[in-house]
Image 1: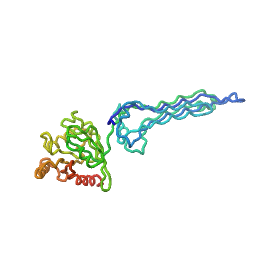
Image 2: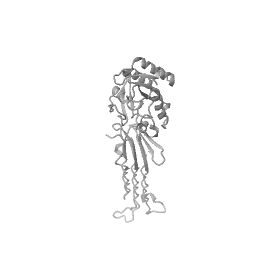
Image 3: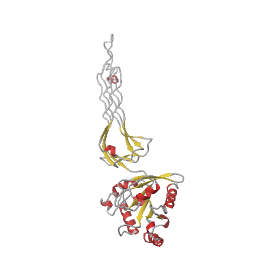
Image 4: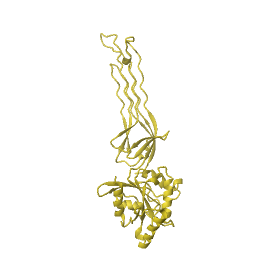
Length: 335
């Protein structure tokens, strides 16, 4: 299934039905009074969370959603039927914006809530409503009111507790594959991961979710690479794991990787650098023990990073991974 995390659409609530202008006509009652019924209310439109969906692809081919109109009133004081409401399913974490003002309208995070987006028009009044002591036979009736119309932008922001950030091939996907049932594509070439992946980690007492996004590169905030467009998927997380490749194909030292990644995060609008972040140095199976000690010491001294926020792991062999997972669970559920 293709991963689509942004969509544009128009929603049109139903119009209210018109009121009827009618008079009672029965045998032996030649001059019956007004009996025109009211029009029915137009249908509303709601958004509803679908737990089984993780993409907005359904909105690629359908751009307009319309609820049913209310029915016209009729004689014998019969009101028109109300138009059926329309429910639009979206993945959990979908944010609804007004496309004209960019105002955030709804954040769809609860599957138990029906999120009202546009209201149907009220039905018009039948002529029976206008009978009075001075006007015994009113012919006046009113049309129904128009339903609300809105142009919307939908943006899917994944819901996760932990976000993984790093350059391409830093081992984020290998890590997620090792610790969860998620199966992101793994390969020894840039941009193996082309879409966000969510993995559920079963801890000792509770479960939590980790989000892996495509690798960032220098200049990502200016449009280079793929990762910057997916940073919104880690904007909700409470903690970031910054993956450092200890055996890179280029000449990027761990310090340079961290500084470059933080620079790109700072350029993003959601203030990602203000989140709690830990450094995960990956591929320790490819270096000597003394080299690893030196790298950790340099990170502490040169970048002023707390030693407890640096984790040395091998996502490929699993070395150091359990220690990291235990610390993650403690951090996530400490409150």
